[in-house]
Image (cartoon, rainbow, N blue to C red; front, side):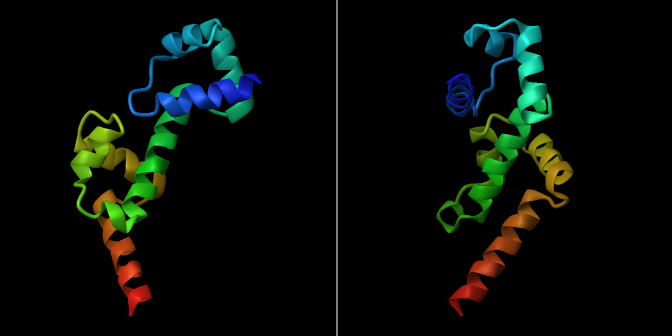
Length: 115
């Protein structure tokens, strides 16, 4: 199934997503066909989809108590963002809150559950 192939490819390349041209080539498609496939299946562009997926992963990491020792910079780097500032701004645009504040809210929520 081609959708599964694409999903697996995306998952394997989440940290450092290839360019749309590279991704299309690696999946045996033309760049135009790949762009059309993404627009039809995900209702967005490949670049936006990949950035959103990486930000959703960051959100899960920030929600997890196991990752409390990871700095925001480390999380950004591990997800392939060029720097913490760019990552923080992308996170804010996506979720309306900065990652440091989101982490604080999640820690507060964890503490309330433990009380």
